[in-house]
Length: 69
Image (cartoon, rainbow, N blue to C red; front, side, top):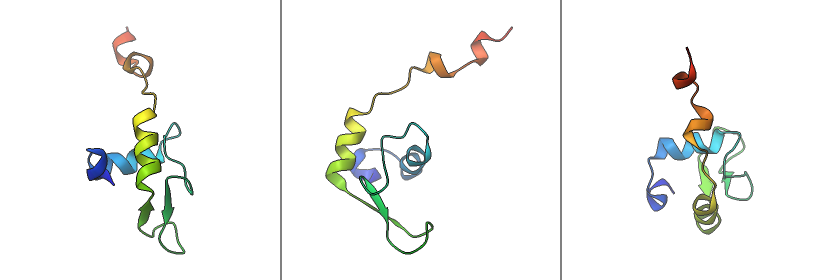
């Protein structure tokens, strides 16, 4: 799935775990086994659409180091 989106596999997994993630379990991905450690199976069309329409966060709103005294 990462290759189709043009991002690194670790970036895809990190995005999936974020609270502001564009990806939702059962809508964009599912676990391929009984445990949460099972490989993920992605829905390519839904994932591509979610990633493309995802509204990115302004870096100035996140980074606080430049505002420190």
